[in-house]
Length: 401
Image (cartoon, rainbow, N blue to C red; front, side):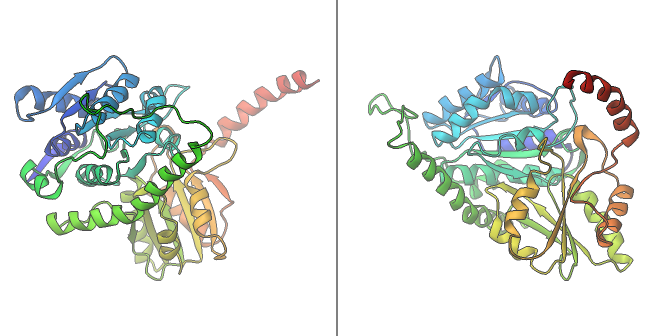
């Protein structure tokens, strides 16, 4: 059913249609509207058979989800930014114990300085936590990814993050085809956990492991992520067959056929880049776009195949590895190793700075002319930077002397 709906509430409706049995909630902007709406659905009786647990912190939210999942309940939570960092110990525990929890992360910058607006620094910091990470390019995709996330998580017994851009998506209102519970029931089978804590058949989960077995445990977790490279596109194909709409999968190519320059990006900037690519194509410029939906596991083989015909690749990302540069770029570089395809990295939109079509078109023009340096900060205010460096450098010299 097509409804004019805020992105957060569309996600809440999609989660409710998946019939979670336990929701552990602690609010933090910009994900608060998701758990608020789920609270309303539980209280009103529209979402039945679900225990909504108000907890005292994000750490408690993930800990509660782990406990619920361990006893066989379909479990869900949501967070953002500092909240994700606060629950990190439990985040690793969830994946290490193979708990198929689904968590929405409304992407937001990490402070200090405090910034409540969007970039991908929060989830990128957890890229090695053992969670599958799926990035939504639109509110429709954010809603559609949640039934798929539960299906993937429960088949593999691996937790899944669905990442959507804070405010840019979570607080935007638009027409969204909201899935109902009966439709999702036909797509998402009942939860049958691989491991369950049962007093009648006592076992321990996540117990102590010494050097004799820890490598094997981590290797098996790695294999489950590799298995996801087959499961994710299969689940996306099943979703498309049932609902008539392509969402999810590993990668999303757009006008890449014959493109000499291909932009790689993830998140909501994909929509802006589609407009830019269309405008450039109309002027005869051979450019294309490749969206990344699955960042973990990273689809190296699919990425190499999708970019095989390109001459140059420009990776645009909303996160920064301080002292190194791009984060997604490192994986793209591995995918392209030995191909001879040139690659450039662009850091854009940190802390919610707008990524405009004007700036992107100017950037693409420089890329096509091979004028981009290896690392570019889009719309960097060099006057501010130079002024601050001039202020700091005398004191730095004094310290060194």
